[in-house]
Amino acid sequence: MHLKQLNWLHGLRVQADLNLPCVPAESGGPDLVLSTGVDSSGLAKSKLRSRAPSSVSDRVALTGVDNGEVDGHEVVFLDQAMSIRRAVGAPRVTVRYPAVGLRFSIDSSGTPALVVASADHGEWLPWITVLVQGAVVAVAVAMSGRAAFHANTVDVAGQGILVGGASGAGKTVATALLVLAGHTLVADDVSVVDPDLPVRPGLLELRVRTWENPLGQLLVDELVGLPGTSQQETVDFRVAVRLGTDPHPDGVLPARMVLPTFDDETKHPRLETIRGAEAVKALLPTMRLVGWKDPHRQRADFGHCADLALRVPIQRLFLPRLGGDEPALLRDTAAELSDLIRNC
Image (tube, rainbow, N blue to C red; front, side):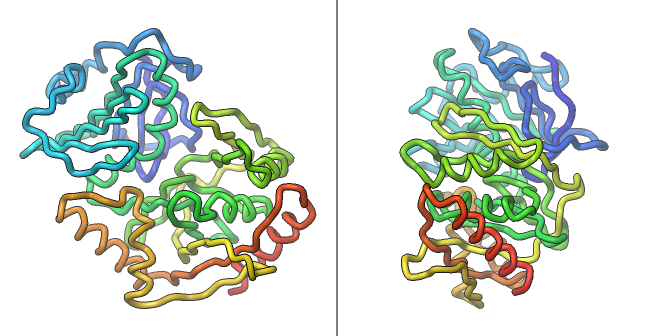
């Protein structure tokens, strides 16, 4: 297996056998080895390789990923898309995506941690490149006890602006507006927040829903007009826009978390600061994996939210409804949002 160079992904130095739209990690050893069986061009091979790198092959054998065993495991997370089973008494979990026949074994018993992918059928292999970059590595982060928020991070004049919320809340729109205003994307989908440490670079693609979404298509059209930007379709029916400007490899310190929502009564972007218990309550749904059945994990997530609410302002961001046929209004809104964030 040919492993690529180290990349920063969700606060981890990740070494993988696939290309990642991330910033290289220039020093240190890997925190995580990602074994997927996908070739360097991103095209799936006919089947997954049966062996991992020799340095971690013994640990792969312990995971049970190839035989799909469930004995000795307990379910700690379950929703419509995926399940997570934890090995009783061991730092190993299996993440399963039944709809696409994929499973990922995560073993954090040693250094580096190890993620191994397996598929029921070769036709599902292209999904690996999407899933490992989101929830799967977020699970590995959570297993390390760190805070993985469902949030994008944008560098606005040296300040880390976290744009958080559940799917459909407006994270991509708000982030795209800031990027169109000249600011730099640091991480898409997952932001790992540690006390007094910067958010390290993560995914450097904005993944935009364009199918029957005129606003999404307009965002893509505007973004690809930026220097060095490219686009490609993904297997989950989105367009991944790879931006031409990379963040600093050291990342950026978080300065605030904004929680976007669309407001039919709003003509211009506006911010409303929330505090105390209300802020913590608003942050809980922004954890990347909401719904862990493990009480320890739930307490840790609450602690992460409370810590962030104490350290940085938490603000609701009210966005006007934007259509897909008004590029001038989109650009004006981007400039207004940029000024609002910088001056508030």
